[in-house]
Each structure stands twice: as C-alpha cells, then as structure tokens.
Image 1: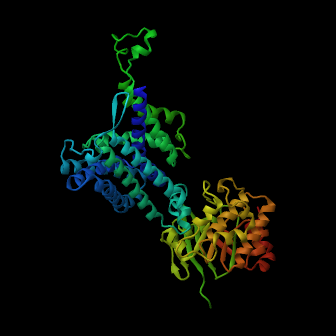
Image 2: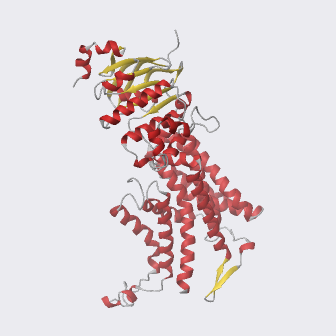
Image 3: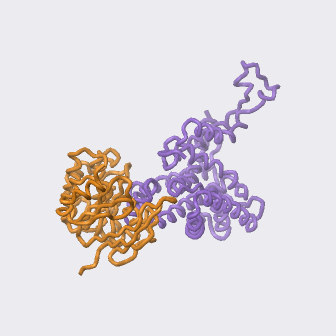
Length: 310
Length: 235
C-alpha cells in the first residue's frame, strides 16, 4: 500500500516533469518539423542557471529568471541559427541541433566543471510535508507538483483561450495559410521555440535539485523526452501529456516493484540461481521508454494521439 | 489612367526542371473581377501560387505599384492581398468563429467587418458559427475560407478553384457569394474552370494555355469567340 501511494505520487511528479520538458519539444517538432536534439540541453541550462542565481540571491528569483534566460537563449538560437540553416532543409537543421547539444554540453563543463554542482532544494521547502505509513514525504516534491500543474494550466489557457494561442495552433498544421492571413510566421516560430526552451528550463530549475545537476543530465534526459514526443504523437500536446504520465508511472512502479523474474515466472522453472531468474523487475525500468518507442513505431506510427505520421 | 492594383509582367515559374509559367502578363484594376480560365495543368493555380510566393516567381509582380516577389507571405498579406487556396486550409479543430477571428491581421486595427457582421452577411455560416470547422461540408468550408480572408480587409483576393468538387447547387451559391464580395469593392482574381460562374461575375476574362495568357477580353466578347473556346478550353 505504502509503495503504491508513494510510487503514484512520484510517478505523477516525474511524469509532469517529463511533460514540461516534452511540451516544448512537441510544439517545436510539430510546427517546424525540427527534431531539436538540443532540447534537453536547455533543460540542463535551466538547472545550471538556477544554481548560479540561487547561489547569488535566492531560489525564488531563480525560479522566475532562469527559465526566462533559457527562453531568450532559445529564441536567439532560432533567430540567428536555425532560421539560417532552415533553407538547407531538415537534415541540416537536425545536424545543427545535434552540434548545438554538444556545444552546450562543453560550455557547461567549462563554466561549471565536470562534476555535479551543489544545487539544493531551498531551505524553506526542505522539510517532510506529511507522514504516511511511517514514511515521510518531502515538501519540495509537492511543490514541484504544483509548479508543474500551474504550468500545465497556463499552457492550456494560452493555447485554447487566447488569440495568440489559436494562431500557434493553426500554425502547427497550416503554417502557409497562417502566413497568407497576415500573421508573422517566422516570429511565431521564434516565440514558440523560445517558450518551448523556457519550459525545458523551468523543468531544469525544479528538477535539477530534486534529481542531480551535472553535465550528464541532458544526455540522460534527452532520449526519454524524444520517446514522449514520438509515443504521444506529432502535433498533440494531449498525447505528449498522456505519454509523459504513462512513462512516469511505469518507470516509477517498475523501480518500486521488489521482484525478480524468478518470483514471477517461477513456474517456468526459473530460479534465482539462474542468470535470467536473478534479473530484477526494477533493473528493467530504464528499458521501458525505449521498448515503448520501438513498439509504438511498429504498431501505431503516428503515436497515441498524433495527427500525422513521422 | 489609374494605376493597376496588380500588375504581372513576364512571370515565369518552374517545378524542378519543368517550365510551368512561360511569361505570364496580366493586370487587375482596383475593384475589378477577373476570371482566369484554362484547362487543367496549364498553370492557372501556379500563377496564383507564384504571385503569393508559394512557388518561387521569376519576373515582375507589382501590387499597388510595389514589387512583392521575394516578400514573406505575411508581408504580402499585410499589403492587402488576400489568398484563398485551392486546398481551402480551414483550421479543422477550431470553430467557425475562431477561424474567422484568425482572419483578423491585427487586433489593434480590425477590419471593416466584425465577426458578427460577417456572419450576418453569410447566414449559412451563422448557423454553424459554433461548430468545429472540420465537420462543415465542402461548400461551407469554401465559404468559411473566403470569409476568413475577408476578415483581413484585403483589396484584392485571389480565389483558387472555389467550386472544385462541389455539387451544382452549391456551385451556384458560391458564385453568388463571390458576386456579393465583389460588390463590396474588393478586386478578385478568380481561378475557375466552370464558365457559367466565371462569365456571370467577371468583368474581364483571361484564358491560359501552355503556361501563358492566350486570350483576354470581356465576357461578352469572349462568348462570341468559339475558336478560343474550342482551342483552349473544351476537352
């Protein structure tokens, strides 16, 4: 029971964090057809910016300014980099973001060093919020839950209830038509790219201290974010949301299950003494996202809720 | 002489290596309704696309005296040139009303018509105002795209094949609607295959063949030119 409740909470939080990261990537990918390899690097930048700002002043300022800074960097990258490369096609863009990811990686290593930095949960939130079945649950995790939910609500509101949001949605599917109606599509692209990066940055701010802030964090998160976008389906934020939650919960539960193959498939004659039997379910957790990716591409190539194939 | 609203001189366009437009020349005066006729594949839609920058144009395209080739599509739109493409491109997951709102270029300077006035002018759409555009019939979608472009207050609208794939009764309605739009003083370049519509509402007719203009004249004069019809239009 205890495992289920805690895994559920952790799974939801991890899922929301994944969604925060992938929502921007879904928007960028669907609108511009650019598979932004550097997206997770913006997540990493968010965490490092937050660390530096927190050291100099406070976490709360970091919470506001780190995502904005990351968003600005993103917008500049789009305007001066991607847009120039765009004329040479998608492969050039892909390679551009690929290079950019490594560039950001190296810059981070030069500026902040190769080891993890001490980016901590703010003191104000560093206490157990409640106790359940004798185990304590940290307040900061509930805080991240609320930040993620607030971001989700804000994103939903902007996209569905404002004219700017409608223009963005229209540009997702019909960029040419939107241009013919007099809307500045390049500027919309830049804004979406910037906001998408800012969201990744926000995920870095609230995830970097709860996970680890080190130069490997982008490489660890990057592939999983791609999985979310592909499984969710191109052009669908709702799909990305579902995929992120599914992945978050599946991974968290897999880690929490204290069983070995031998326990489950014991009747097959597996015992803990055999190599296969001694594999734990938890050890399969990192495999789950990629298994999902492979299966969905075979079974349903447009993803859960996508409106077109890759 | 008044200045032409749109003047196209020696317009050429290519799809890969194939030379689709071979020196198109045309002029449209303010408030004029022009029908661009021709068989399939002679380059009528490509002419529209080249003017709008969808296909890279070679040659001179002046809108209100200003060269527009090479401009971004929103810049062309903001000069007052509207485009209703053959593919209609409504936004299917939004309501009719939301589609119309997106036709407004700038909320600080909205056009002649509000969404409600537009719906009053075209009552068929009024009934569907809060439906998703994706569920509309082909004719309703066509009306919606034209109204959406009108929301942006264009001085000239290029309408590409508005009656393609529509039932005869609906074709007539669309014809009425284009005539209605023309009455408001907007110039129209109508790319159309159906002579009935084109001759009913056009002030002037251009006929295209093999990537160039082969005839131009008034509908009355055109009706007497059976030679042009049999050579360039009849299948």
